[in-house]
Image (cartoon, rainbow, N blue to C red):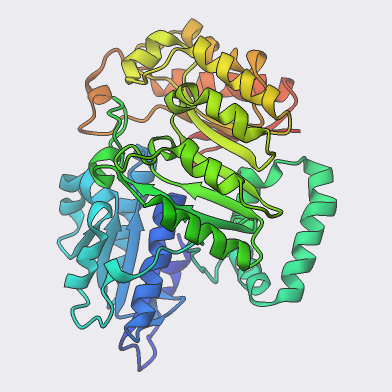
Length: 435
């Protein structure tokens, strides 16, 4: 039973007019959207509350990345409807599994690809949603039933505590658990911001991966003008930030709709003086192969330090079924080139186990990646069929039992390779980082 389900029967305060509770069960990109929604709401004179029983609006930001997360979002929709408040469902679930959402909810919704429709709900808004600047930090839920979130909230409020917190992290925890400990669960629940300044460089996706339904939710590619990205970067520098995260549904295809490119953006950024590092999130591997020469040059400036690649599989047949347009040997060669350009570069990966028809040998091809290139951190997910995708119709599908067997094998394999690694039943995934 969740904290909210326990508390919802208690009486509300007498004055909860114009109060909004925001809850995000979504990825980092959508959590940045949730933060922008928070700014929009407060600009209209609404108060953000930390408990849904005090609200007259509840905004739930959802995700449909895998079936287990979708199911959790559907449960949250049911839970939040039991409060004496209007529930507004936002995020990707709205477009990924619309029929299932309609089975449990008939209220107002805000799709990810049309966040501006929030103006149709808050019609007296003095400042339209589209006129707001993007946020540079993520929204974090506050749950008074969670010790971690209470701790995190207190630390964020006081500068002295933040400095002590960061000192302990840099001088004690990293020595105990390794340089990358804060990138994976459960530490990323305590250190989610990593003192980072997020810049959303584009929205939407041009790919058509057979297993992914996210494209339906995020729409077509729309890159932010390069000058605007640089402006936001310079603002972050002026505010004293040193860790910059470039966010997008795929950072690699930035600029192709505006006659620019990710290398052009990174070249401009990394030529700006300052003590900072840049991290790339959600990078389709095809782009790192295409831009290998440019990346080698940029990496030698020692500013681009972290890249997270969505590799998914180490086997060419499976990659072809996934409609991932690269060959694994080309990717390994490119990653090795980039590591040679800057040995301090941290490469993270997302991998998938149990894609339809994947044999045990093909699964082992994915694990062999760890023998061929230094991978520093990442996640391994069990394949989850999402309705409406081509992979949903592919056969034969692996049984749950076989996928759990492979995940156990992967966990044991990683630990033997000197990684911190652990399994999360919530997302059916393994998180790992190099010791």
